[in-house]
Structure formats: C-alpha cells, structure tokens
Length: 100
Image 1 (cartoon, helix red, strand yellow):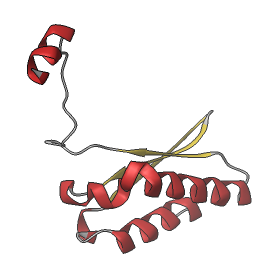
Image 2 (cartoon, helix red, strand yellow):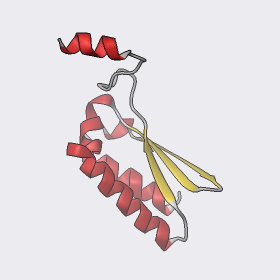
Image 3 (cartoon, one colour):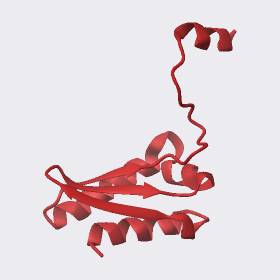
C-alpha cells in the first residue's frame, strides 16, 4: 500500500463512526495521483467539516505527503447516493417558486 493511500485511510477511519464503510481508491495518470474517498452517508459531515475546513486540511496534508514522495496527490470525495445536495436541473423559475 502506498504512503498516501495509507495516510488517507488511517486519517479518515479515525474521524468517522463507521470505519468499515471507508473505501479509498488510488489511480495514477499523467496529472499525478488521484485518491477517491467513499464513506457512509452519515459520516460525510465529519469528513467535509464546517465550510469544508476538514476536507481542505486533509487535502493540504495529502499534498505534503505527496511532495515528500515527489508526487502530486489530489483527493476526490464521492458523494453517497441520497446525499443532501440536490442533483438535477432546475430552471430559475423553479428555484424562485420554491423560495416564495
């Protein structure tokens, strides 16, 4: 297991309640290393944090780990099915009608 993968898995499992649901996928391409993180829906808030501060901190630490091993490391956090952020195309009129 690579250092960046192990670091992310260890860090995230320490933050969440459901550590068994943590899945980290690693892919390498010409842009660098991409780590894709999937957690249980109820743990998303613990990974994102208020205003995304925890996610920003994890990304910063992953960049440091990557620099130590001469690699560019990026993190993608998968939103679980049934997430709170709405998906779909709404027109401006639909949004205004919801507000009123």
